[in-house]
Length: 175
Image (cartoon, rainbow, N blue to C red; front, side, top):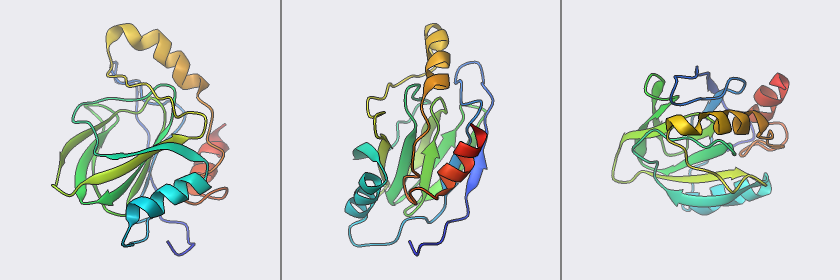
């Protein structure tokens, strides 16, 4: 990362009846936002910690549509590549590769449609939101999750760029 803000892709999704998505906040995709290093895991974890994001984990992405109703989530691709669908079955499928970062608002569905053997992501949540829930769009969860999503606080800092990053510019201007 050279200090310049990346080009950011934004995607808004409608409630599809199963996956609620987020009526206010767009999904943010930062292509190539992470520097190439010999230890991308440690570098991204340090960046997250510096910018107030915690509960970091390393893994892939589940191969079924799911979302979190009590937390926003960031995924930093630290190895390989994958096809990820966001927004539920009628959402958008994006190709992500090492160096890309995706910030997923509470309620936005995500699913791994296929990945290469080297795919790995570091995920995390804004500090104070590390207790995430795993939701899959079951009918009975609807009233609770809609209320949860509307009550999730905005992160104070962008997970990659801090106080002046794309998340702050795009999300805080909507509140």
